[in-house]
Image (cartoon, rainbow, N blue to C red; front, side, top):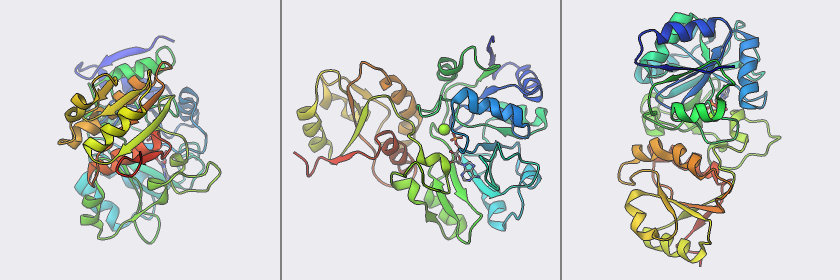
Length: 344
Ligand code: AMP
Ligand code: MG
């Protein structure tokens, strides 16, 4: 298969991509979070191709991408007033809502669940494609399953060239980590995955929020969990990743003492001088957390190299978007965190 490379700046692109979607094909789409691998979310055969292309476990559900909140009631039932308030405040944007699914949503899309995840991406070309296709776009992150997510069209080309119908190049993703997911099907709203919309922002609208245990701890593969995707090894380069917590100086001291040839250090730009000779790679500025979220997956992809022994990673502290970075890095590290203030 010849994979078409389409520019978001080309006025023909939405119509070309929408036609491929209507024909049951696969199109990689830019969004503000990460690049998605999109197909008609109502077409079981098209959705099956997403699972096949990614090597994604069948019970890991997909998010339906809508062109506006008006579409929510077409695919969701029993929509609480809080869902409308969240959509009003954060859509288009990096927030996914889990709601009871209508019968027109195939179980293949929902990973067999009776609920469905929906969001409206903040990316004009992608919303135009969805609108022209006239169907919701099922789109997980476009990476091969288990690998770091795709935040540029080149990442998608690397993983899927010749295996999908088209890639729409909309430049690097602004947020860089996947959407925040909130489950609204229980008595209390539940955070299933942190992202660009922060827990603090959600609390302001909802007044209440439970954080699912999958956000902060390793989950057993056989466990029944609310966010099935969260139990799989995720976002990870092929080598071991260790997060080194603690002050700048103590962490540098710990890493320099444990560093072996072939290892790498994933750090903040401000820390680069501390790691001379330790093959440091900066993923953004600690003082500007959105540069860290935007740069994280591109950096993890560079480190996904058989020549790399072990990665020592520095992780921002605190809430807001840092909370999402902590979640992704901890998953990449299989929750291996050492505290340089205590360890020798
Ligand atoms: P991805 O698009 O690759 O970031 O993955 C989408 C994630 O959304 C999945 O891994 C699930 O954790 C979550 N998700 C999608 N649909 C549902 C649902 N109905 N209930 C709970 N979580 C969901
Ligand atoms: Mg993913």
